[in-house]
Length: 94
Image (cartoon, rainbow, N blue to C red; front, top):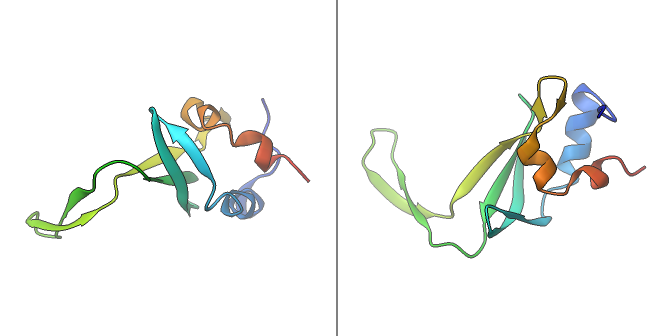
């Protein structure tokens, strides 16, 4: 399966996915952010209980939604976890 675009153009198309709801590991999630290095999609769980975010020193901090970082690529192909989100068709639309 080939990539429709590369580099900055792929990152730009990935950014259009922000706000879309998906299911990941049985949980309702929302595409929250795109990390251009990789690239990767960051999901924020909608319905799960918040987790305690540690401070930079490892001490318990505030409660935040659970997040998951999903790689977009696996070498030269799409990463299986990214494919499982069902977002590929949205990336390849013109």
